[in-house]
Every structure is written in structure tokens, then in C-alpha cells.
Amino acid sequence: MTLASSMLAMEISVPGGPDVLLPASLPVPVPGHGQIIIHLAYTGVNRPDALQRAGSYAPPASASPLPGLEGAGTVVAMGPGVTRWQIGDKVCALLPGGGYAEYAACHESHALPIPEGLSLREAACLPETCFTVWSNIVMRGRLKAGERFLVHGGSSGIGTTAVQIAAALGARVFATAGSDEKCRAVEALGAETCFNYKTADFSEEAKKLGGFDLILDMVGGPYLPRNIRALADDGRLVQIAFLQGAKVELNFAEIMMRRLTLTGSTLRPQSDQAKAAIAQAVESHIWPMIAAGSFRVVIDSEYALTEAPAAHWRMESSSHIGKIVMKVPD
Ligand SMILES: NC(=O)c1ccc[n+]([C@@H]2O[C@H](COP(=O)([O-])OP(=O)(O)OC[C@H]3O[C@@H](n4cnc5c(N)ncnc54)[C@H](OP(=O)(O)O)[C@@H]3O)[C@@H](O)[C@H]2O)c1
Picture 1: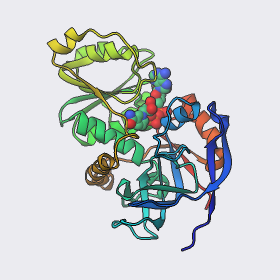
Picture 2: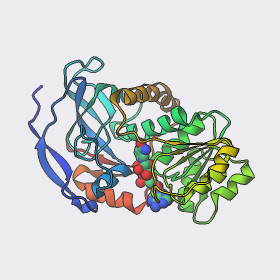
Picture 3: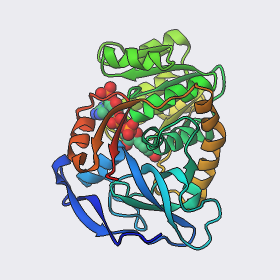
Picture 4: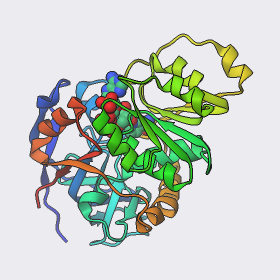
């Protein structure tokens, strides 16, 4: 198969608002050792793309400067050392960047087969949220059946994934979101209760429940002391973002007295080996949940790749529920 030498991409012309995403003609990536090139059919939009576009989340030095952390399509080229895939295989993949384009490169171990019964459009929305949620609530947060689990931003791409996975693991699931409409949608996905944080205080609600064993948080800032109060003894708080600030003052007494664990992680800068281990866990635990019907992809809206600015405006409005996806031209 002969590949085109150039491709359509949406690049960040300068750091700024959604309209700085502009079409460009760029060289098709060349696969390195162990890498595959995917002709993308769809690419998922994630909040870190918006942060990168705004200039507050630099890609790792080895990654494409284009935004785009996930996608699904067809394997069209392979570097030396690739063993799992063949040209023509349909895959979805966690990308180190570069998803806002017709072709993207990734390590072969970060690609997964399309789960049975799912379209490429749905599969494109899986990797970033599934890798993030599994690695943080299970590998890091040690969530177990019967535990009380709270996720903030319950209607987000991450939230809709976390609610369903935690419910499938047998946890009692709680969430927060910013409107009653969002809360009802999150409850329909398996949350016992979703608190509208504009009208209810989750840390007060936590007391009535006996506290949460695990909290997955993306808000940070003023939520940190409230999260600590909301944890049960021996509870764990896993931080994956800080939409309301990265710095707070902390009283360690409560952490020591109640044996709490505060941790967190970010996926993108982790090593290829670490991401491969997460990929294996996602395939062996989440793919069967999809096959069993206990996890589905919640898609809010679809845009063409060239409409990336509109997709980002939608995300920044925070009116979406679930994932925003972009169709890459055939
Ligand atoms: N650590 C990692 O490896 C990793 C990986 C992927 C994503 N993330 C982070 O996870 C978060 C969710 O990502 P996503 O792609 O699912 O994004 P998303 O769908 O846009 O979700 C963001 C959610 O946060 C809430 N929100 C927005 N601004 C807020 C604010 N100032 N204060 C409180 N809540 C706010 C919104 O819900 P309401 O309108 O209901 O408040 C929205 O549902 C992002 O912060 C992202 O950076 C981390």
C-alpha cells in the first residue's frame, strides 16, 4: 500500500481560544520502531486537547505537536518490530498526540481491537477515558465491590466512563454534576445518586452515607478540603486534574488520624511500557464489560474534523453530556 505523503490536520496556529485551530497540510507520520500508522476514521475530543490549545498543557517532547489523544481507524503502515497487527486491521488507540489528522502514529501496544458490536465512531471515544479511569480507580485507587465511590464531573467523558465501570465492578456509585438534567443522565448510567453541586453540598451528603471509600476528582482547588472531609476512614482521593486550581493549604492531621491516601496521575507523559500495561488491563477488563452490555459509549455530539473549533466551543460550554467525537474525511 502506498501512503499519501501529505495529510489534512487541524493544528494549533497560536495558543488561544477554539478558533486558533486551523486546517493545515502536513507530512504523514513515518512509523518508528514498534509503531503503527492508523488512517483515522474518527477521533475523540478530550478536555486536555482544549488545555493544550490554550497553551496550558504542553505535549511531551517526543509527541506530535497536534492535539488529539485517541482515535479509531485502519492500520496502514508499520515500523520494524510490530508483531500484533497487520495492514488493514481495524483498531482504536491511545495516541501520544496527533489525533486531529487523517493519519496518526502510536506504539502498537497502545492500540486495541474494536470491541465486538461497536462502530469505529464509538470505539474512537474509548481509549483516553478508559485508560484514565481504569488506571486511576482500579490500579491506583484500588476500588472494590461494595465500596462507596464518588466521581466529580459525572457527566463528562471521564465521568460517564467512571460511573459505568465502577457500577460494573459492583461499587456503590455517586457523582456530582452542574445541572439536574446532567444528574438524571448520570443516574441513568448507574449512579445511585448524582448531586447537583449548585444546590447540594456533596461533603454534607457524604456524612449521611458514612463517607466515600474512593473519590476521583478533576476539580481540585477548594474541593480538596471538602473531598478530605467526604472520605471515609482509610479512604483514597485520586486527583486527575485541577480545573479550579492546583495549590491549596492542607491540614495533615485529618489525613493521619483517618489514614487517608491522597494520590493522582496524568496519563500522557507515562512511559510506553506503563501505557502498554494499562492497555492490557483495559482490554481484559473493560472490553468484556462492553460485550456484556454493562458499559456503553455516551456520545454527546459529532463534528467534522475541520469543525474542530466548534467541537471545542461545545466542550468549553460544558453543556455536553458524554463524549464529543470528530469524523475524519475518508
Ligand atoms: N490525569 C489524566 O490522565 C487525565 C486524562 C484525561 C482527562 N483528564 C481530566 O479529566 C477532566 C475531564 O476530562 P473530559 O475530557 O472528560 O472533559 P469534559 O467532558 O469537558 O469534562 C469536564 C467536566 O468538568 C466540569 N467542569 C468544567 N469546568 C469546571 C470548573 N471550573 N469547576 C468544576 N467543574 C468543572 C464540567 O461539568 P459541570 O458543567 O457539570 O461542572 C465538565 O463535565 C478534565 O479536567 C481533564 O483534563 C485527566
